[in-house]
Image (cartoon, rainbow, N blue to C red; front, side):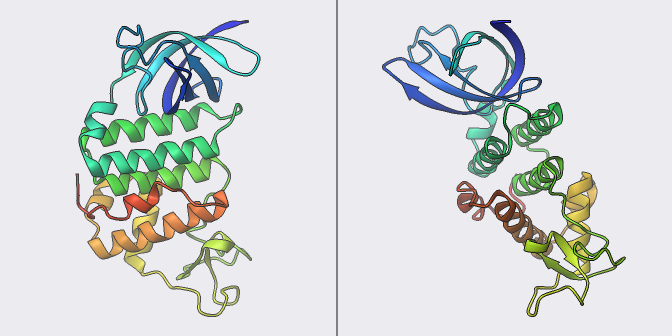
Length: 246
């Protein structure tokens, strides 16, 4: 069908010509979509702010040869205003949509869409520390993409845990026999926090100390960027967020 409809979260936009924009979206059923929103930069645009980053919309699109065309857009989640008003939420949201953009394609699953929408909603409401929401999102989206870190058995040889050495390049916790010399060890509480972030156990996440939160965040950041094969630029700004900022 040349015309189709879907729910989508806006990842990023680029100017096109004098009044148009190219909008990159992660949709629920059609994966990542790049489409032209004609006239969206005019003050009289029928789209308003519904096609800005971090917004969730019900969009109708016309299928084009290289880029689709946005015909209609109705707001489903107005998260942008509450996110951009707080620096720590804004930087965390940028890291999330950048990761989603890098990981998703036309074959992206509905779970990837729902995970991102849930994370942006939590950020907009200030439900937890922004860095914790980001860390939980990164762990879960990496798992959905086939790169779930091992927090139990050795990631290399499968030896049952407990283990205390986390090696990003090997996929998570490894036993002493598999750990390269000088590999960093992770404390029991920080490891428990990693598991809580993966499982969405927010009582445990919110109660974690600043030191354990920083240790877990560092490992998650390194793990995600290693498997993406190049850095997530937005994370450079997220590193300055205070551990308990809401």
